[in-house]
Length: 251
Ligand code: PEP
Image (cartoon, rainbow, N blue to C red; front, side):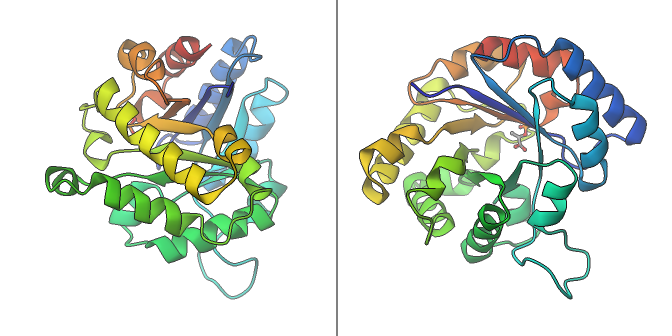
């Protein structure tokens, strides 16, 4: 049995005061987290504040991205060790905005994932197809390439620290969600791929989140779809009411 995992990606939103207030509201409302894992990924500059504010609430903190290198002359980058140092315990890699706005490919995503693991962070690896790829019948080929490319060289032991997020790009920030059937289909396909890459015990343990316009009103239906182990949430992670509504649906 995999514990559901709900993570909120704040993206480049909020300011210092609102990040603090949101963290405070989540801390006050987290309640019993014994049946669900909950995490948020604030902008780098608010990581420490949010981690300190969430304190011992059980809500984990992570970064939205991480550098593929450990240290050195990489202007503008932030290493896994640095985010860990200020309270982050995981990093998101391969988010569709990194892939499609900033042109990051599977090789770079894989290097970031491995740097995160080497820096003692857990990882959420995002995969997902564009609308034109879905329309061309290429969904499975796209997510296969992204999953296999992203996990290249990752050992069975390291997989205990990896979560996969299936995020169809056409459903991100658009208000349009995959149907529970569409989500299940891809989640079960991804599970099969993991079973091809790792022994059953390891593949079975990996959680696969769904992401793409998850809201309190559709969370219960999506979270109960076969193969869906949680949610990666963008827009609805920016208010405590919406985010906790989704967490409540996962409890
Ligand atoms: C995301 O960007 O990971 C995401 C799922 O965003 P939204 O929930 O806003 O669609």
